[in-house]
Length: 318
Ligand code: BYC
Picture 1 (cartoon, rainbow, N blue to C red):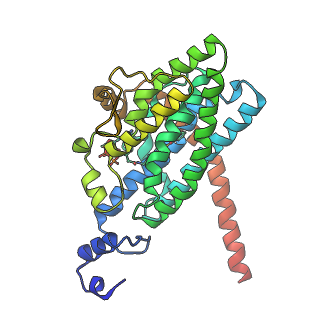
Picture 2 (spheres, helix red, strand yellow):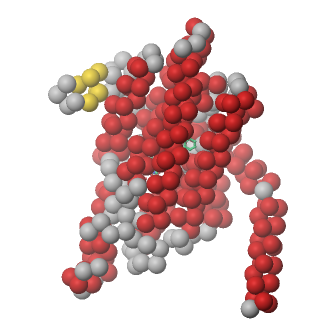
Picture 3 (cartoon, protein in one colour):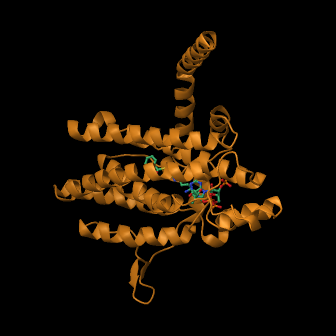
């Protein structure tokens, strides 16, 4: 840290470190609002990874081949791992795992709206991998440069794994599009249902985003919601066309002047409904998580007992 920064009062010193692209680490001083905002975003990110296992897990027993089943199993396990890295990163900010889970169960803490839509067909597994993981990558590549060290470092590994997820999803769609009439129709139907929820993953328009201004100033977020969404649309449209899929948006049009696709308006009423708990699967997702958490209580208790015994033995030896 340079001498000029050391001489400033805490808040200004903190902002100067952010402006100088220094990473903030767990034991560093930070404004309470920075800490709370990070806990909010990282814990919601962690919940999204874990709840996202549900629509995908729905198809593990029905994957069309053993190879597809093995790939899907590995992907779902990766998502659980992402949840673990992110919960661990959030814990460095002074919140416990139990508190975060409790907030999820009480509906205080959100998770990505897209996981409140059902996975009805095998093609939906392709659409989730292709569209949802692509959206996650576009966002998370920018988060590799977020100002909080543990969050930034978690993102590096997560992005590598999401790239594999994206490819397996796109591969499912590609193979279906090379198949029978019914298979092509199934892939198109899936894109029709997941396209708009995928665009909602980037959050409200910049002007409506409650947290963006402060999060950008603190470099928690590095790019705006609309900016990331535009990048996503530009790349997804080309990927769809390459395998013969049509984007379900009559307003989609290449804009030569902007060098980007123009696209239609998201149904923001639907977005609001889903993030307020009234989507197609919200209740089912939370009920399932609560049951799995309760069923796993004995594992946590056994691990805690083992850990305290191990520590006691280590103290005896010392
Ligand atoms: N869904 O001020 P804003 C995955 C909320 S998982 C639900 O713009 P912010 C995968 C927002 O939380 C990857 N809620 O917020 C896993 C806020 O409400 P609160 C998921 C949303 O934080 C398994 C309010 O709306 N990725 O890929 O500045 C299988 C106002 O919004 C959503 C991440 O979590 C939404 N879509 O920006 C397969 C990325 N959008 O908190 C795949 C990390 C907004 O005040 N998160 N809200 O109650 C972020 O980058 C940011 O939090 C967001 C929102 C861009 C999502």
